[in-house]
Image 1 (tube, one colour):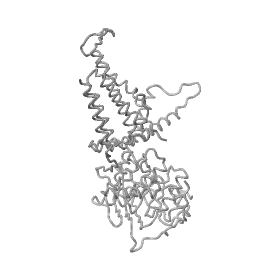
Image 2 (tube, rainbow over the protein chains, first blue to last red; image 1 turned 90 degrees about the vertical axis):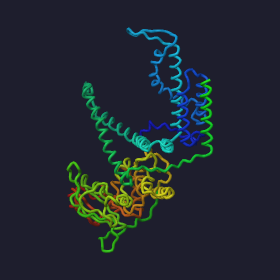
Image 3 (cartoon, rainbow over the protein chains, first blue to last red; image 1 turned 45 degrees about the vertical axis):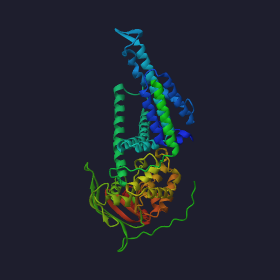
Image 4 (cartoon, rainbow over the protein chains, first blue to last red; image 1 turned 120 degrees about the vertical axis):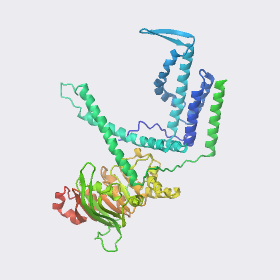
Length: 263
Length: 255
């Protein structure tokens, strides 16, 4: 039983796939920060950033629309920014009423709202591209190289390893419940809402207990192999001249986008 | 993939004699869990270099608890000596390198994202230099015939593959004794066969807890029977498997 729904890595032989993971992590972060720093309504800069993203998509051989298709799931989160429509002072575009409250959409608010949507949409896409072209363990190595504290990278590594085991566990529990959720002919299956909630609560508790006991066994397995509180890993990655060149080039492009966005 | 094997070469079981290299010695070991459940009541046993010994007994007999004592994860009352060294706080790291303990559930044993990192975990924590770690990982994976799995993700493997990798994770520490907890549980016949052949070929002292009596008969010249926290029989596998009264009394079956 494998549940790999979380693994977004797509095996391909491409320029982007072969880049050192550190390069990809750094460029991704710089790109996201750059998007956040672009002023509202810097349309040309947004367009250039989007072209940058398209180029990366093309180089990854995943298809131009690859990240676009997957980015839509993240859009609802950007709607949190909807309040800026009403809260920025400016020329009133239109007003509507909900109960006794009047909402006035301003032009400045609208401009900021659209800019935020575009920024988050671009940022989500580059992150999607990062996880699609980099194996997760390589990502963790990249973070280690970039001096992210070991405690964080270790937690992420364990999370990644046991997410799948836990999901399997959840599905086994659900299946076990399903196979015993029988019904007598003519009668409705299952008890009342409270009873069902009770069952769900017990399942959550079970899952916690099992994970807790598993963590004990894992810790024993680590002790058995010499763990004394410090994690050591070997990193096989080595920066090639190409990696340095790509990093410099990408950061230069992002820098130019920033300049264009500001003037 | 069918693998042909030469006929097994059994080491004749023997009693410990003066001058024999004692690999493992347990004397009068008692242990109770913190909740008061008493798991071991005076267990004594010894293994010599090269012994391959089966540890059988019903669930709850104390087999796993005993195994957790062999590398100092648990510390009960009594003596445990590995190659003549008593387990103390100071020599724990050395003891753990000598006793390769493989847990029953490979998902507990394999905790790193990739196979390579898991097999490298032991040698790295022994403080070995990088080149040596890589050599050992390659050798360990070669020994379990999983060399091509080095860069695979652990959660993508089948149970049989995980079990073999789990063994490789301790082989890479070059242990002088291998302690396995139910290695054949949950394996399909082919994976089980591969595992049996692997265990037979590994030239290393072994203590294997199992319910698989066929495996015991096939692989281990000597068998130790445990029940209710005690060793109730210790001797030639052939003799123990003939003693039906003994087997029935301790919830076991003749294969």
